[in-house]
Image (tube, rainbow, N blue to C red; front, top):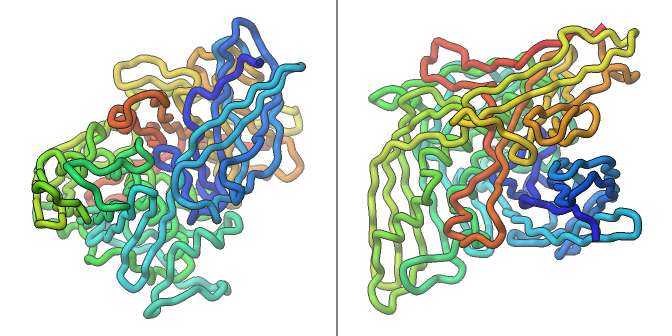
Amino acid sequence: MTHVTIPNRPFATEQITGLMLPDGIFETSIGTQNINVHLRNVGNSSTSVNVYVEGASTPVLTVSPRTHEVSGLSSGASRQVSWEADFSAVSPGVHYVSFVAESGGDRTRMIEKIFVTRVNFDPNTLTFGAETPEGTMEVQFTDMVEPRDRCCRTPDRDRPEQTRVDGRPDVIEYLQEFEGHEADFEFCPPGYLPEELSIGVEPTPPYDGKYGDLPFQDPWWKIVLCIIAVVLLIAAAIAASQEGGTVIVGGGGGGGGGGADGDEDCCGVSASGGSSSYLVAGLVAAAAAAATAAVLSDDRDPFRRGQDNTDPGAGEQTTGERLDAAISYGEPVALGRPFAADVKWTYTRQTTGGTYTHSVSETNTNQHVLSRYEVRAPDVVDTGQQERFVVEAEFFDEDGNQVTGDELFVQCILAGPNGEYERFVLQDDGIDPDQKPDDGVYTGEFDFRRKDARLGMWRYYVVAQDVNSADPDMDPEEAAKIIGGMVVTHQLEITFDPSEECEFVSDGHVNVI
């Protein structure tokens, strides 16, 4: 057998922004996504392997054939690889993907678990839903933090007809019809952050006793909510841009969370269009996911805490659960920083015999942070001199310890002078251009020497996301406390001063000549 393993659960990245979805969960409404894994050499010497996807437990999961040739992977080092796959027809639930590693005459099969949700949107009721085998979650964003000034203009180009219900678009369709980045795309979401929301869970089937099942027997329900928030913001930003700013996805009038009366707006996010706008959409969605996970507590889910404190009567079955939450952001929501937010929530349990409630007011802090990170890259690349554009980055956790290997998923996203959108992965595996395995220096390269690369000034953003490192053998209640897929680098900060622009900064510029 080969000495290659997959240490962490395979994770999803979506095609529009390239970012990992919350906790790496795959979402059918997005359709085509990448299946990503880290391959770790657990042998005592360097190895070279060919790795491919053999198949999946569901025949409707279509994976594009590809064999990755990994040469010279040092002992203990990890390399991230990916495959494009269409999840459109996959049922929500737990599925398994079989990966095969071959080296010489040795062959190892690795069967890995993945989680799949299905998000939908009802334009008539402005309700989002998500399906899992353990139940259905329905969410209404009754109020969202909005920018004071809307940026949208009426599009001057033809668009395909969309399904309408009472004149409103089904924003999910915009994800499903995404065909590629447009150089003139303008970022214009209906809101940035959830402020007031109502969440209902209908367990399948109704359950006896105090506790229902966790989604997929692992993540909390709040992770499903994070997925809905990401789908909402990316889909609605695209829809609003194409529809001239007419899209409505919340039941309230917006507001800030920054003021005592709750009616103030937040800063606006500006982007130059095209590639920058897609990245901003992804980062705002990432901020919403981080805020959602933070205010609803990383440690234990509000639904679980509500169950802790509501004892149903003897013989009663729980038929429905509800969480009503109001969030106040007392300080800027900054990716990769330990921002705090206040939340008041009420959990309601509906049983065959009655109704039980439990309420909490608390302040929680974002746990997905770095103390600092450093990026090194050339300022100028002369293609005539065959110069390489190599990016190196180092990351340090909240205690100042350097992060290494498969603890992070790191990408460099390039915004070109004419709206181009390129991205490449940075690895810490000792394979060229990386110099040394597992030393915390993540390295990647983009070839500006290729014929279709545009000359001019490019901006680059090194975006790192943490990875769910839960051991498959962990108790589900403990495994659920480990959340991955959150952005830990600091390219975006959402403040609550409507006179300001939200801070959206690149990690550097490179002039390609």
